[in-house]
Length: 465
Figure 1 (tube, rainbow, N blue to C red):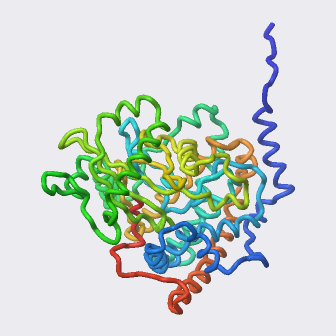
Figure 2 (figure 1 turned 120 degrees about the vertical axis):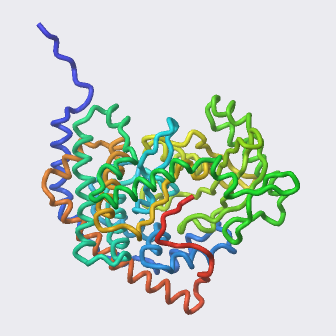
Figure 3 (figure 1 turned 90 degrees about the vertical axis):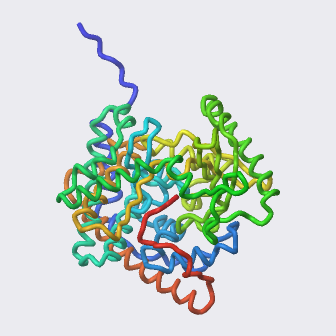
């Protein structure tokens, strides 16, 4: 006679029922509500408060980039949306949230096994938080990007719905998996080729995939460096890439940081990095929301034609922390690295963290390792739909690794009730963003905010370094 095992955890049926029961307290329809809080701060003042600790000489570039479009503004205003999301309905189920979940923060990159995978690729704001916050930010970004592409309004709404539907259906799939299978699951970037609807789209995705696979340190070496007096140097492209005036002093400080960074790596990575020597360091301006943070790229060589490029970037507290809980990590770089490892199916082998002599926090990673450059503005409506469905899928996979997919799936259900609600929220919050963008433009015109719009940058293109 078989012996019945004592259950250590609630059954899948019990967890599903618990997820469904949450609808009594927080209906799915209520997730579509958006109304600004009476305590909502002046958006411009909130943005200015987020500038604390950034390099002031780079702030005009930050606001110049944000001024390009409502979508660009949205990318740089994660702190504002975090405040707004904190007053929206939530089930109480938490995950490791991306924190800045918009369609520009997804893409392809190289795994340690040298596969090209598709996943979330920005974690500066990652923190434990309600899963709904990432979904709402993703859906809103879809509406704004679709509007920027001049899609009809109905198409913009439908696009948001497609992203949310993908999230819901894949979350329910992960709910049926063994926990370890959900953890090991990953998305190959080649799915963009396989799912292409036309021969033209298939060819375009194949070319993007080929370019990404060629994006290695060896290929980058002649593109971003040159030889001067027998020494390899990173090419200056001010104001985006440049060597600081007090280079010798900064190089000594970075050398100390690099030594501390090595102590956060597994022993095998230390052995590998010992084969390389730091040759050059240059400051680098990246992204939209990140402009003003201290960021630099390092060239390391094991031999003349054996390069490695590392990037280190300053890390601040997550914009979600005022509305969730303070990070348990004393180094914000460790928060970013740990969140990335939790959410991504495969992470850079050189991820690590450090601090400088002023106790500023940083994290390290490789630069552009097999990174796909995806131009959202060049997408057809079919391409766009395929891409955002993959974003919803990748987000569900990340949340399923760090939360309870069974309870979340139980709450989401089989119907499109949740899809309807988030579509409504996304459209209304996109309208709010456009209003806030108008305030930004006015603040720049009146001199309340500095802005530089003459530097070489195309905001519609996703080239997060």
